[in-house]
Length: 127
Image (cartoon, rainbow, N blue to C red; front, top):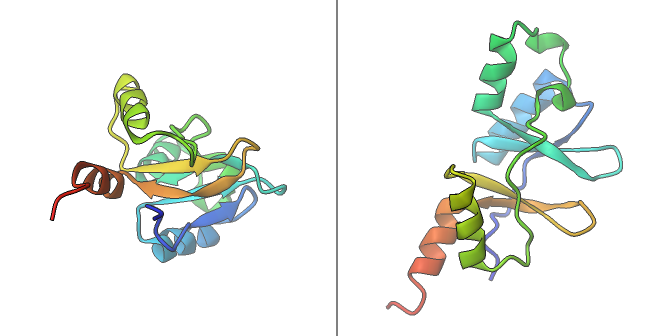
């Protein structure tokens, strides 16, 4: 059974501010993935990324999603083993609330909410 929610908020790298905000609202998970024109994963936009972008003096109304997104975001493969995934996240020294799942070809598969993965995998076998 998939841990992914039914919604995967995403925008293209050329999406404007209004499209970014609409996708953030639609997704309801605090982030939006950014994909290239050829549908390859480029990065993620969270509230933090927006704050950093604005704090650097950038004008939000003139930006595109590709300008704001974190291109070095922590990602996982849909085939990752849960415990290896958790060890990688621990080594990264950050507890990510959302993690983009990207396949071997670089395409976005979905966005995993870490709390869903933790709850599902730590309660397996319990009634």
